[in-house]
Image 1 (cartoon, helix red, strand yellow):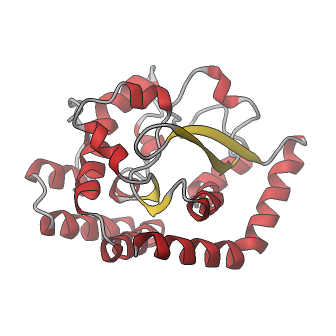
Image 2 (spheres, rainbow, N blue to C red):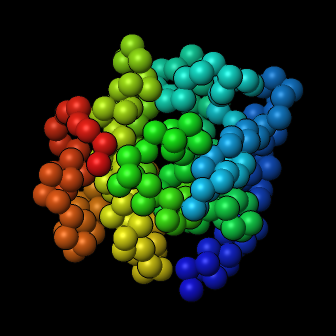
Length: 232
């Protein structure tokens, strides 16, 4: 049922959004004459890898700098890229990955093969489901770039402040995923763009219903500074 939902929703999304995608792709190409699409190698469900397609929001070749985490003030982000990231437009092209079966509409965000190699045994549960375009962590940490923007080492800041909680949220989803939960999280993702506090409240209700740890629910409120923690 989940796969059928993914196929129908992604196909419809690509058809409906094709005019918007065409305009954005042209504008990105016009900046520098380079491909408007970025293909990044990501870890697949159960192991292996696939090419995740994103609309390019950074300068061409940005992935070759060796820095995987991106702060909001990263100089590699183009002027148009800031707009694309603000409205999550760069994720829309991943509907193709969903249609092809590499990804799902909802699931833990796909990570690099290098990052997955450093997963704890518990974090490897994230590979038990298809990676997704959105999930609870995507809502809770939609401001990920702002969280690490002033860090001297963005990758280290990500590992200490975001990864521990992002992984826990992804594990809870992997253990409880179903179509009804997917529909709920898709709605909360859209709501987060318009009213993040209400979306966070919705995520907290989901976590409460799933019996999540109180500490995780507290972090999901995002009403206090994040503190360094260990990966699950």
